[in-house]
Image 1 (cartoon, rainbow, N blue to C red):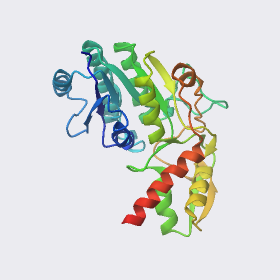
Image 2: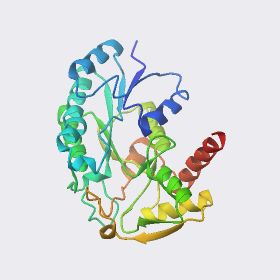
Image 3: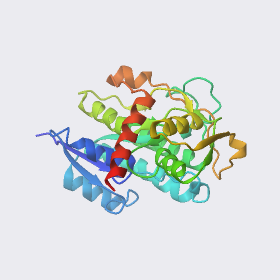
Image 4: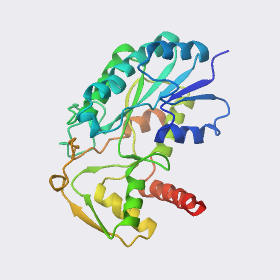
Amino acid sequence: MASNKILVTGSNGQLGNELKELSSAYPQFKFVFFGREKLPLNDQAAVEKVFREYEPAFLINCAAYTAVDKAESEKEQAEEINGRAVGSLAATCKSFGTKLIHISTDYVFNGKATSPLKENDAVDPVNAYGASKLLGEQLALENNPDTVIIRTSWVYSFYGKNFVKTMIRLMNEKESISVVSDQIGSPTYAADLAEAIMNIITSGKWEGGIYNFSNEGVISWFDFANEIKRLTGSSCIINSVTTTQFPTPAKRPGYSVLDKSKIQQAYSVQPKDWKQSLKVCIIKLDADARQD
């Protein structure tokens, strides 16, 4: 009998938690979740032990070093987790016949584009985090061309730390805040990304390569903040600032809208509108806050 096990690494992050929540909708699979403590990806012996024990049919790699600004001073660590460990994981998947889905980022691009980025557009990361994620993509496909890589952008969720939760907190604490208006992209609700991943797994077909996924819509962080304000009924004043007025250790791409036609055609994945998904997340956060 073929294995029905799906291994999820990085299970304590935003996407990992959304997959946990979604897993009950897929009783035909046995999900096994591993956080960093239980399975450090750069420990090859531990990884192989887990593969031998579970013999997974699929592995969804949500594990990553995600501290974008910190990566500038911790390049080696970012490269180890986002780069070399991903290459080893892909090789292990290949030798065990496990199908790998790996999550990557819009930060592999330099942000100078003016129209939605396609999977085969030239990559040119502007920060250490983006460079480490690009290394992971390259090593994964080199070691296992059958890998499915999903590039996503501006991920937020009910879980973990993210822009939406930070904005809600700041709007509650302050009378006014400043948000950059010259970085353009598309948000991704991690719950929608989790569904897209399960669509691929249950599609009955498999085509290795890179795919883009985010919610529909082209906005700035300032637009994003204003919609959060509207949905939460906040009276906080939001000031628009430029990237140069708001310097960060890591440079951010100015434009990172992803073209999603490939994943739509290959796997019939239909991304939802960003406002619709944001509303779902905020209703959930609000219900949780009321319980406290």
